[in-house]
Image: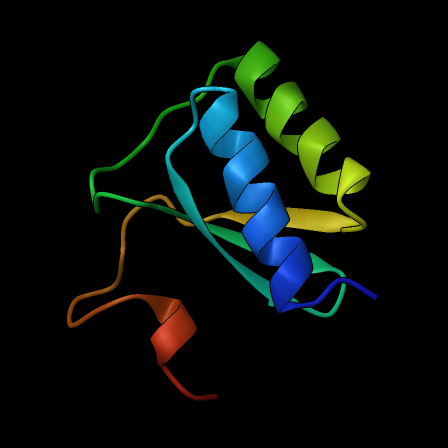
Length: 79
């Protein structure tokens, strides 16, 4: 199961591929947030690349946060 180390490795791989995301691991889910808080739009090739990198780092799913919620990221909110 992916963990914080997997999230860090995925963040570095995404950065090396030109994608600036913060990554949180939630079991098999990689939660991706724009690192600079600016909304990101990915074309189909970009989405495939992100998905491939997430799978290579042990994640089964990836979710892209398009806009952070008011008051901060959903990663910092509690259920």
